[in-house]
Every structure is written in C-alpha cells, then in structure tokens.
Image (cartoon, rainbow, N blue to C red):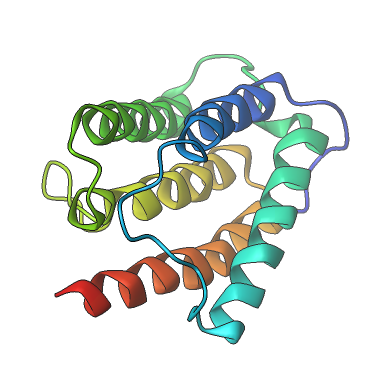
Length: 156
C-alpha cells in the first residue's frame, strides 16, 4: 500500500519529462506573467505536493516495469498523459506565449499545463499501488491546478 523502497527509473523519467520544459519555460514565460498575487494556501499545497511527488517518484520501485499484465495499462496511460504534457509544451513554445496560451486547454483537457502532469502522477500512483503517491498527487493537484485556475480567471 505504501510502496517498496528502492530507486524508480520510471519515476526519474517522469521527473525529467516534467522538469526539462519547466526549465526552458523559466526563460520563456508568458507576457505579463506574475506570481505575486497567488493564493498562499494553494501555494502551500502546490509546494508540498511538488516535494512529495518528486520524492515518491524516486524512492518507490513499484513504478518500475515488472511483468506485463492488464494492470500495465495504467503505466501506459500515465506515459500517454506525460506525452500529451510534452505536446502541450511544444504548442506553448511555438505560440506567441501569451497568458491565454499558458493557461490553455489541450485536446479538451482544461488547463492542460497543470492538469496533465497531475493526472500522470496520479495514474502512476495507481499503477504502482503506492498510496503516498496518490496522496501527493492530490495535494499537488489542489495547489497546482488551483493556482492555474486562479490565474486563468484573472485574465478572462
């Protein structure tokens, strides 16, 4: 339920897929972006969720590929969500990089830049049957999606 301790190369790969576009984004932020008025409670959830999700991703070997069963479809689903996240970033970097581009939907997924990675880690937690990851992803989702929703509502 809480997972088997050990390095997860799948979790590491997910974090690489998460961090690379975010590092690039730090130099290509949308015009007019500011984090000054973010809700402090949501920010606490976001930061806590980020730390917990990163730790869980790396320290539970349950996320690694084991024998292929029907349950492995959860891992495939998690990877599809991360690939969609990468595709959303490609679209963002090719856009005019306005706030509306950053808080956009993608293939019918609202606030895709925030929603897709949260869903990917949630599904990864289901695949690994790791309760800590499920909790971490929910905490992250409350903060991260909440902050993105707050920002999007302020530009509408």
